[in-house]
Structures are given as structure tokens and as C-alpha cells.
Image 1 (cartoon, rainbow, N blue to C red):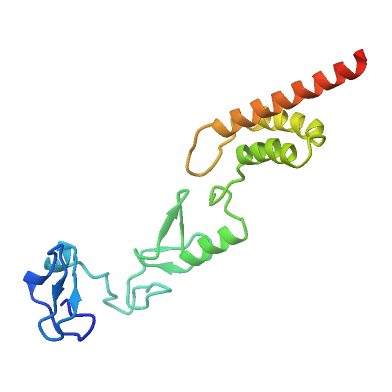
Image 2 (image 1 turned 90 degrees about the vertical axis):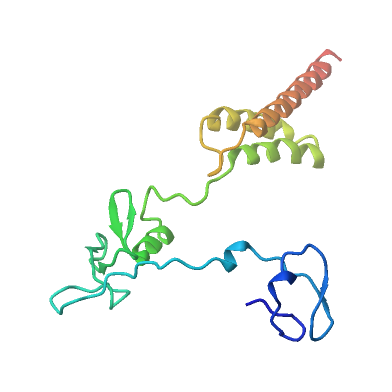
Length: 188
């Protein structure tokens, strides 16, 4: 049931999803109610989880009224179908998965990465903005980072190699600038 935000009076169906402001029938306050059509759809009956029928069956560690279907392969707790998390062909409970993530015991669980392409770009740009002389050290570092990390994954969500390309071009121009400076110093 949708009601007025000022007085709490229930709104009738012709006041919902009208795309214009309407006056509340009881308090005359203006309001607009946009609602997803799913709100009015009748819910279909879902299936409840399996309950324990006899005392001889094991129950879930987290849900005592649910039937256990598998033990956690890390800690041995019995789990219902809701609590069972299959990860790398292992069945784990939510606590073991979280503990493995926080203590970095699960090797294939990756939830963040170092963005070497962004580091290379910053390393190429920031020394040039502050003072030009640090670029004699940072430009070769950027070229090395670009070559070393080119095939490494950038982020969990894939992105283009444009940061590597820009960092390499900036570093190459910096190296070229230092070569010109040294040649000019030698020829004087």
C-alpha cells in the first residue's frame, strides 16, 4: 500500500505513476508516486528450505531447523543448501570463506589488484610537474614498468592499455629530452 508522505493516507491506484504532481485527497499536499509494476504483482509461492524430519538427521550449523546437506571442507561444520558455498570445487561455510579472504589463505580469491598502468602513468607525469630533474630516474623506471607489467592483468574489470601507452610515450619524450640536454652540454 502506498500512502501520502505528509499525512499517511493511502493513495488510490489512479494517483500512482501519473508523471505529474497530484494533490493528496486528505491533506492537499502535492506528491508524485512512481512505483515499479512488480509492487502490484502477486508473489508466487516459493519453496521453503528442507526442515529436519527426524532426530537422526544432522542440522545446519547456522540454521538449526534446516537439514544439513554437506560438511564444510575447511572446518567440518554441517551446512544446509543455503549456507553451502562452492569455491574452486570446495564446499565451504561463509565464515571459512571470509576468514580465508581476510587472512589471504585462499589463493584464487582475488578481490583487488595493483594497477601498475596507473602507477606508471603517475610516475611519468608527477615528477615532470614538480621539477624536471627527477625524470632522469623516473623515465627509465616507467619504461621498465611498461615492459614488465604489459601482459599482467590491470584491474578486476578489464580496461585498455592506454595508460601504459601514454606513460611510455611521456617517458620516451623525457629520455629524449635528457639525451638532447646531455648532447648540448657535451658539444659546448
